[in-house]
Length: 365
Image (tube, rainbow, N blue to C red; front, side):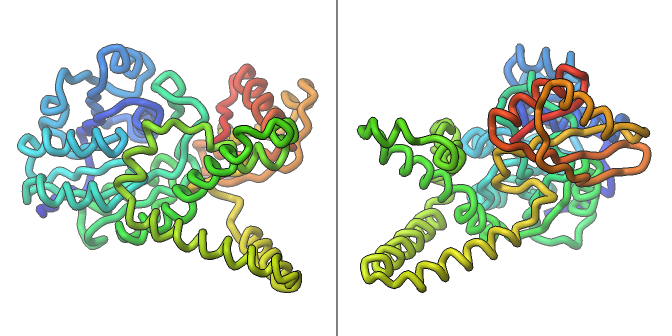
């Protein structure tokens, strides 16, 4: 595929919801010279333009990508596949096309089959989000300190370098992975936990006694069981092979653990606990990823004296107890992000409300 861009001037943003809208806001904040054209429903586009996530509105996907140097598909997998087919004939020579979906193999293969040779496709997956959805909840700091996976065919292209540099401007940490490698990892740490959470919750479906005790750790472990199936349908179908492989491995692991307990081999069970604890403790806590602690809140602050003092004062006056504070990243002259740890989900939700009401950029994942 052709590759000629060393920078971007015009961006087409197809899908201006939480992720697309946040990306538009972040790009306009850090690269204000960009011209961003959005495509979505009319009411979404009106709000996106009002909030400054886009500069122009397009009446169709084809019109949106016309003359775009960079095309971003910020939709779920199913719509992204259909949009790729629709826009392929109108992609200009040298343009870079990327997406934000959590499954990379299907869209990478589809791009190879429908995009013209003069366009460069680079699969993308920003591993961040919010408990809220839609353009009204888009936030320019959503990508601060988030891992942003890119799955290029080659890293030795001007298009890849340009896209990596642009995304880094949003505060994201770009990580390069192969599409298959990404999908296997996503199955293991995102898709399987989703299915396990659903299974655990359904275990108490007809057990009122268990349901009455299902608080604390159970709620924390199964919080993602409330996710919408409409989003997960395409993910599970698109990543079916790795998901099935991981389900088989999890099933075998559970059976081995069952056998050790049945045999009374508590030393083997203890070793499972020890290795799990060591692995869990080794997971970095200073960046966002596929899964995030329920009680963490992220606060973006300007680079000015007293920023942390303001955060602590606001929470203290609201009687919200902070358990942990960590400065994740600060860029001189622009600001940085604090990670605040709280006792439980209710405390973190209260913290977000209190901090947001005080004019601070606060959110949990």
